[in-house]
Length: 77
Length: 368
Image (cartoon, rainbow over all chains, first blue to last red; front, side, top):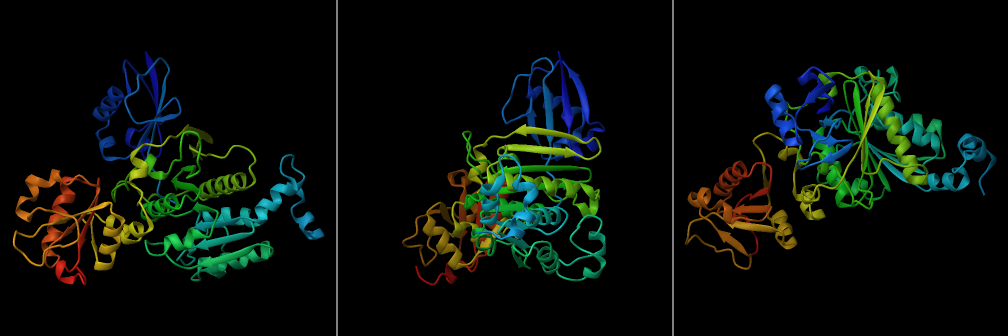
């Protein structure tokens, strides 16, 4: 099973990519720990998570081709 | 009756299907405040004045600098060193004398924010730092004032509309990011840089959302967060929903909002706010706060007539879980031990509670 992850703002700098395809993660908690293991700096940054373009706050099961987006706040104006 | 200039000035939007005179009259009757006359504020101001919004407030404490000019399109080299709100007013008056422009050269803070926004129908966030963005968000959420949020970094920008009721409920910034990111976590435009056209696009989005909200056309970004990427020209929009904690972090009433000091509370290591006896009385009156007396048994005068917990300072570490409330005021004799207690308590509950210490202690309370 493959899902894609989109990184916005400074998360793109932390991960070095805007989009990542990941296989075999069952839910958003598993995805989160997988990403934080791979990119420890993610631990230090505030962001919200959206699955299929809807904000989520609790664990959500991920299905084939799910699209997860991680969005940090921006402070500029 | 409107004069011929009116029809001519607004002709191109008057002839739009679904817009017409009804929408134009709504714009003329609307009062919009733009907080921040910088990269986002400038285009928003230009388009809203052009569109014929009846009254536009501008609040910004800053002066024009040369490094502003690549993106802050209201200003010219002749304005360097002058007040932004005054320069903006002059340009906007020339653009559309029918619009009432109300400049206000102050920095928003806990004492002035509610009064500044109170008379406006809609507020636009053109601010350039988290501190005042959270302050404005909380003020608008408290007064149930629609807030058109905008923010940028380098090549990306965000837009959303908060505090507009919908079937899912109303959302504010704290439903997305409950607490202010720590300093060093994100960079401002001064440090990170920004492409000049980016605030131009995001500020124009905000003006567009404002016009949609006032006139009722289209689908405004209520409970949606739009992200625009200037490098890829891609737009990504997600649906938002209230978080449960988002609304609990908003001050419960105006006294609590004014007693808080967001300039202090975002300083690292200063999560504790010292309050004077007047602010103390206001907090007590509202009934949400718990008072914790950290003096030893037998110290006088006792807190008569004020419901409180008695937890002597040396016992605070073991007994802190007895304090269930989210708003906590520590008191002692002179204000020293309560400050120590408050900062210990804030380390035990990082960021999750509003913690105050009574400056001057019980000695400073006039009437007990």
